[in-house]
Picture 1 (cartoon, rainbow, N blue to C red):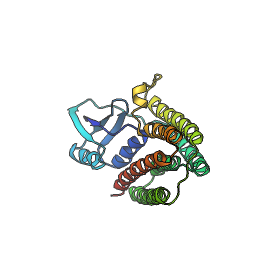
Picture 2: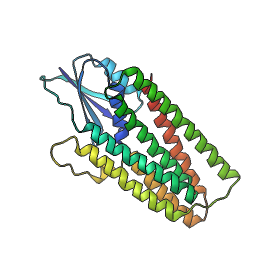
Picture 3: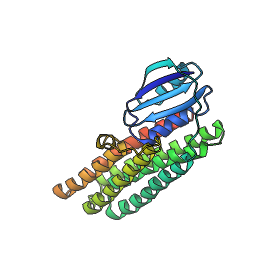
Picture 4: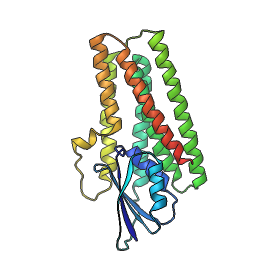
Length: 264
Protein backbone atom coordinates (compact mmCIF):
# COMPACT_ATOMS: atom_id res chain seq x y z
CA UNK A 1 0.00 0.00 0.00
CA UNK A 2 1.19 3.53 -0.81
CA UNK A 3 0.90 6.67 1.30
CA UNK A 4 0.92 9.97 -0.62
CA UNK A 5 0.79 13.43 0.93
CA UNK A 6 -0.52 16.48 -0.94
CA UNK A 7 -0.30 20.12 0.04
CA UNK A 8 -3.44 21.92 -1.15
CA UNK A 9 -2.91 25.65 -0.75
CA UNK A 10 -6.57 26.66 -1.23
CA UNK A 11 -8.07 23.99 1.03
CA UNK A 12 -8.99 26.34 3.85
CA UNK A 13 -12.68 25.53 4.19
CA UNK A 14 -14.65 22.30 4.84
CA UNK A 15 -16.45 22.71 1.52
CA UNK A 16 -13.13 22.33 -0.33
CA UNK A 17 -12.53 19.11 1.59
CA UNK A 18 -15.87 17.76 0.41
CA UNK A 19 -15.13 18.80 -3.18
CA UNK A 20 -11.95 16.72 -3.05
CA UNK A 21 -13.77 13.77 -1.47
CA UNK A 22 -16.38 13.82 -4.23
CA UNK A 23 -13.74 14.13 -6.94
CA UNK A 24 -11.86 11.10 -5.67
CA UNK A 25 -14.98 9.11 -4.81
CA UNK A 26 -15.23 6.00 -6.92
CA UNK A 27 -11.57 5.91 -7.95
CA UNK A 28 -10.34 2.34 -7.65
CA UNK A 29 -7.40 1.67 -5.40
CA UNK A 30 -8.00 4.47 -2.89
CA UNK A 31 -8.15 2.99 0.60
CA UNK A 32 -8.57 6.08 2.75
CA UNK A 33 -8.35 9.90 2.80
CA UNK A 34 -7.11 11.92 5.76
CA UNK A 35 -7.51 15.72 5.75
CA UNK A 36 -5.68 18.29 7.85
CA UNK A 37 -7.28 21.68 7.19
CA UNK A 38 -4.89 23.48 9.49
CA UNK A 39 -1.82 22.31 7.55
CA UNK A 40 -3.77 22.23 4.25
CA UNK A 41 -2.61 18.66 3.71
CA UNK A 42 -4.30 15.57 2.31
CA UNK A 43 -2.94 12.08 2.94
CA UNK A 44 -4.09 9.43 0.48
CA UNK A 45 -3.67 5.72 1.18
CA UNK A 46 -3.88 3.86 -2.10
CA UNK A 47 -2.96 0.71 -4.01
CA UNK A 48 -2.92 2.14 -7.52
CA UNK A 49 -0.44 4.49 -9.20
CA UNK A 50 -0.48 8.05 -7.90
CA UNK A 51 -0.73 9.69 -11.37
CA UNK A 52 -4.56 9.54 -11.84
CA UNK A 53 -5.09 10.68 -8.25
CA UNK A 54 -2.68 13.57 -8.73
CA UNK A 55 -4.39 14.59 -12.00
CA UNK A 56 -7.81 14.54 -10.33
CA UNK A 57 -6.63 16.74 -7.47
CA UNK A 58 -4.80 19.19 -9.73
CA UNK A 59 -7.88 19.36 -11.97
CA UNK A 60 -9.84 21.04 -9.18
CA UNK A 61 -7.47 24.05 -9.36
CA UNK A 62 -7.09 24.25 -5.59
CA UNK A 63 -3.31 24.53 -5.69
CA UNK A 64 -2.73 20.83 -5.08
CA UNK A 65 0.91 19.73 -5.04
CA UNK A 66 2.27 16.24 -4.38
CA UNK A 67 4.78 16.35 -1.51
CA UNK A 68 5.73 12.70 -1.11
CA UNK A 69 4.83 9.10 -1.90
CA UNK A 70 6.10 6.15 0.08
CA UNK A 71 5.23 2.57 0.90
CA UNK A 72 3.43 1.91 4.16
CA UNK A 73 2.11 -1.09 6.01
CA UNK A 74 -1.43 -2.25 5.30
CA UNK A 75 -4.02 -0.91 7.71
CA UNK A 76 -7.67 -1.53 8.42
CA UNK A 77 -9.62 1.65 7.79
CA UNK A 78 -13.03 2.05 9.34
CA UNK A 79 -15.51 4.52 7.90
CA UNK A 80 -16.73 7.11 10.34
CA UNK A 81 -20.28 6.16 11.26
CA UNK A 82 -21.00 9.73 12.32
CA UNK A 83 -19.97 11.24 8.99
CA UNK A 84 -23.51 11.43 7.60
CA UNK A 85 -24.86 13.00 10.80
CA UNK A 86 -22.04 15.53 10.75
CA UNK A 87 -22.72 16.46 7.13
CA UNK A 88 -26.42 16.95 7.92
CA UNK A 89 -25.45 19.25 10.80
CA UNK A 90 -23.21 21.53 8.74
CA UNK A 91 -25.71 21.43 5.87
CA UNK A 92 -28.49 22.59 8.20
CA UNK A 93 -26.33 25.40 9.61
CA UNK A 94 -25.26 26.66 6.17
CA UNK A 95 -28.73 26.46 4.65
CA UNK A 96 -30.28 28.05 7.73
CA UNK A 97 -27.94 31.04 7.49
CA UNK A 98 -28.55 31.21 3.75
CA UNK A 99 -32.23 31.84 4.52
CA UNK A 100 -31.41 34.29 7.33
CA UNK A 101 -29.03 36.33 5.16
CA UNK A 102 -31.44 36.38 2.23
CA UNK A 103 -34.23 37.75 4.41
CA UNK A 104 -32.10 40.35 6.20
CA UNK A 105 -30.21 41.16 3.00
CA UNK A 106 -33.49 42.15 1.39
CA UNK A 107 -34.70 44.02 4.48
CA UNK A 108 -31.42 45.92 4.92
CA UNK A 109 -30.93 46.44 1.13
CA UNK A 110 -27.42 44.96 1.44
CA UNK A 111 -25.82 43.26 -1.58
CA UNK A 112 -23.02 42.10 0.71
CA UNK A 113 -25.43 40.04 2.80
CA UNK A 114 -27.22 38.73 -0.29
CA UNK A 115 -23.91 37.68 -1.84
CA UNK A 116 -22.79 36.04 1.41
CA UNK A 117 -26.11 34.16 1.53
CA UNK A 118 -25.32 32.78 -1.92
CA UNK A 119 -21.92 31.67 -0.64
CA UNK A 120 -23.71 29.85 2.18
CA UNK A 121 -26.01 28.24 -0.38
CA UNK A 122 -22.95 27.16 -2.37
CA UNK A 123 -21.54 25.39 0.70
CA UNK A 124 -24.96 23.80 1.25
CA UNK A 125 -24.80 22.46 -2.31
CA UNK A 126 -21.43 20.86 -1.59
CA UNK A 127 -22.60 19.18 1.62
CA UNK A 128 -25.87 18.17 -0.03
CA UNK A 129 -24.07 16.57 -2.97
CA UNK A 130 -21.79 14.78 -0.51
CA UNK A 131 -24.79 13.32 1.29
CA UNK A 132 -26.51 12.39 -1.96
CA UNK A 133 -23.34 10.76 -3.27
CA UNK A 134 -23.19 8.32 -0.35
CA UNK A 135 -24.49 5.10 -1.80
CA UNK A 136 -25.32 6.74 -5.12
CA UNK A 137 -23.90 6.03 -8.56
CA UNK A 138 -21.10 8.11 -10.08
CA UNK A 139 -23.37 9.14 -12.97
CA UNK A 140 -26.01 10.54 -10.61
CA UNK A 141 -23.39 12.37 -8.58
CA UNK A 142 -22.01 14.06 -11.71
CA UNK A 143 -25.50 15.00 -12.88
CA UNK A 144 -26.40 16.65 -9.56
CA UNK A 145 -23.02 18.43 -9.48
CA UNK A 146 -23.66 19.97 -12.91
CA UNK A 147 -27.16 21.13 -11.96
CA UNK A 148 -25.87 22.71 -8.72
CA UNK A 149 -22.93 24.38 -10.47
CA UNK A 150 -24.98 25.96 -13.26
CA UNK A 151 -27.70 27.07 -10.84
CA UNK A 152 -25.05 28.70 -8.67
CA UNK A 153 -23.58 30.55 -11.67
CA UNK A 154 -27.07 31.73 -12.69
CA UNK A 155 -27.68 33.22 -9.24
CA UNK A 156 -24.25 34.88 -9.19
CA UNK A 157 -24.79 36.47 -12.64
CA UNK A 158 -28.20 37.71 -11.49
CA UNK A 159 -26.44 39.21 -8.45
CA UNK A 160 -23.92 41.00 -10.69
CA UNK A 161 -26.74 42.56 -12.68
CA UNK A 162 -28.36 43.78 -9.48
CA UNK A 163 -25.04 45.30 -8.36
CA UNK A 164 -24.80 47.18 -11.66
CA UNK A 165 -28.40 48.37 -11.36
CA UNK A 166 -27.78 49.73 -7.88
CA UNK A 167 -24.46 51.28 -8.89
CA UNK A 168 -25.82 53.25 -11.86
CA UNK A 169 -29.55 53.65 -11.19
CA UNK A 170 -30.32 53.29 -7.49
CA UNK A 171 -28.54 54.99 -4.61
CA UNK A 172 -29.83 52.89 -1.71
CA UNK A 173 -27.87 53.10 1.54
CA UNK A 174 -28.02 49.69 3.26
CA UNK A 175 -28.62 49.36 6.98
CA UNK A 176 -25.10 48.98 8.35
CA UNK A 177 -26.28 47.72 11.77
CA UNK A 178 -28.04 44.74 10.19
CA UNK A 179 -25.03 44.03 7.97
CA UNK A 180 -22.68 43.88 10.95
CA UNK A 181 -24.92 41.87 13.29
CA UNK A 182 -25.95 39.21 10.75
CA UNK A 183 -22.41 38.88 9.39
CA UNK A 184 -21.05 38.40 12.90
CA UNK A 185 -23.59 35.65 13.58
CA UNK A 186 -22.63 34.04 10.27
CA UNK A 187 -18.98 34.32 11.32
CA UNK A 188 -19.77 32.34 14.48
CA UNK A 189 -21.71 29.74 12.49
CA UNK A 190 -18.86 29.20 10.03
CA UNK A 191 -16.35 28.92 12.86
CA UNK A 192 -18.56 26.34 14.57
CA UNK A 193 -18.85 24.26 11.38
CA UNK A 194 -15.08 24.39 10.98
CA UNK A 195 -14.67 23.27 14.59
CA UNK A 196 -17.10 20.36 14.24
CA UNK A 197 -15.50 19.04 11.06
CA UNK A 198 -11.98 19.27 12.41
CA UNK A 199 -12.89 17.80 15.80
CA UNK A 200 -14.47 14.78 14.15
CA UNK A 201 -11.10 13.72 12.75
CA UNK A 202 -9.57 12.95 16.13
CA UNK A 203 -10.59 10.97 19.18
CA UNK A 204 -9.06 13.66 21.32
CA UNK A 205 -10.55 17.11 21.69
CA UNK A 206 -9.20 19.50 19.10
CA UNK A 207 -8.62 23.13 20.08
CA UNK A 208 -8.95 25.30 17.01
CA UNK A 209 -6.23 27.85 16.47
CA UNK A 210 -7.18 31.41 15.57
CA UNK A 211 -4.85 31.30 12.59
CA UNK A 212 -6.80 28.41 11.11
CA UNK A 213 -10.18 30.05 11.58
CA UNK A 214 -9.12 33.34 10.06
CA UNK A 215 -7.73 31.69 6.93
CA UNK A 216 -11.12 30.26 6.06
CA UNK A 217 -12.63 31.89 2.97
CA UNK A 218 -16.08 31.92 4.54
CA UNK A 219 -14.87 33.69 7.65
CA UNK A 220 -12.90 36.22 5.59
CA UNK A 221 -16.08 36.98 3.64
CA UNK A 222 -17.98 37.54 6.90
CA UNK A 223 -15.30 39.95 8.09
CA UNK A 224 -15.40 41.69 4.71
CA UNK A 225 -19.12 42.35 5.03
CA UNK A 226 -18.61 43.67 8.55
CA UNK A 227 -15.91 46.07 7.31
CA UNK A 228 -18.16 47.10 4.43
CA UNK A 229 -20.93 47.86 6.92
CA UNK A 230 -18.61 50.11 8.90
CA UNK A 231 -17.52 51.90 5.70
CA UNK A 232 -21.16 52.35 4.63
CA UNK A 233 -21.80 54.14 7.92
CA UNK A 234 -18.58 56.15 7.79
CA UNK A 235 -18.84 57.23 4.13
CA UNK A 236 -22.66 57.35 4.01
CA UNK A 237 -22.43 55.48 0.69
CA UNK A 238 -23.61 52.16 -0.71
CA UNK A 239 -20.38 51.67 -2.68
CA UNK A 240 -18.52 49.58 -0.04
CA UNK A 241 -21.51 47.23 0.11
CA UNK A 242 -21.55 46.88 -3.69
CA UNK A 243 -17.79 46.24 -3.77
CA UNK A 244 -17.91 43.41 -1.21
CA UNK A 245 -20.97 42.00 -2.97
CA UNK A 246 -19.09 41.89 -6.27
CA UNK A 247 -16.07 40.19 -4.67
CA UNK A 248 -18.23 37.49 -3.09
CA UNK A 249 -20.10 36.85 -6.36
CA UNK A 250 -16.72 36.27 -8.04
CA UNK A 251 -15.80 33.75 -5.32
CA UNK A 252 -19.17 32.03 -5.74
CA UNK A 253 -18.59 31.63 -9.48
CA UNK A 254 -15.15 30.19 -8.81
CA UNK A 255 -16.73 27.71 -6.41
CA UNK A 256 -19.37 26.84 -9.01
CA UNK A 257 -16.66 26.09 -11.56
CA UNK A 258 -15.08 23.67 -9.10
CA UNK A 259 -18.42 21.95 -8.59
CA UNK A 260 -18.83 21.66 -12.36
CA UNK A 261 -15.46 19.92 -12.55
CA UNK A 262 -16.99 17.13 -10.46
CA UNK A 263 -19.36 16.50 -13.34
CA UNK A 264 -16.58 15.97 -15.87
